[in-house]
Length: 280
Ligand SMILES: [Fe+2]
Ligand SMILES: [Fe+2]
Image (tube, rainbow, N blue to C red; front, side, top):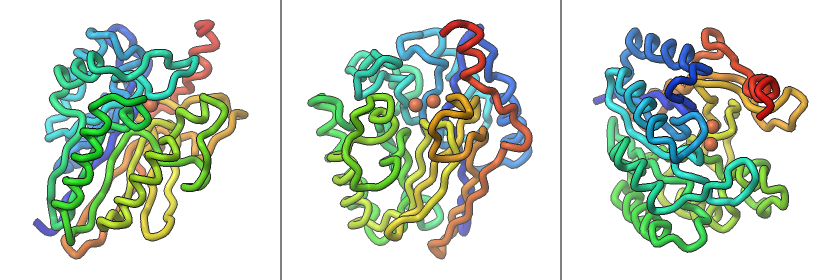
């Protein structure tokens, strides 16, 4: 295989009986039916809001199944709880919520090869989990997976970005900022592994913003949400307030291309307006 075309969709935020963003997801499905990429990485926040809503998980899974191409799943904070306790997401990641995700989607991490590339996706919610055994187990799995892909260029996928401004930044005092990215210790460990094992790009979601930059030989991608943008226009943003998804093409010569797709044909739903109207 000379070229492997993969899309990343993130932050679908689908809910049973809640139609806020379903129009956009159906447009994504129509695009996929036309373009026929080989695979979709579904990079977290599949459900609307509550990680404990069985009906929302069942609804999201059924909607994703309409896509008609193979999918690989990763969890977000709205799917299995957050690793940092703060007001908006008081539900923390735990074994029960992880088991629910596995029941609905079958996996929360994966590794595979295609077109001479290695692809590794893992559970961002476990970083800084406060000592869950699953966190240590995942670190061992990441190290093993990257070692097994020796000599291949590698693309990493995880729900949260590694940092906001700088890889050396301290954990933020403001918890709403702290939950935006990985904790400093996990980030340093992951970047050390990435540099040692030929990682070429790290693709995340979570912020509902579009951002692409390179640093020390690694491209960082913030994939927009397919559903909505978050925060008022006056709120602090690091990337563009856009909706959409990423269309990647990985080639056997080690090169890759990307396009940010959908800002021109998805509705840029403004989540903060709906929340203001509903008093949330
Ligand atoms: Fe999200
Ligand atoms: Fe998220």
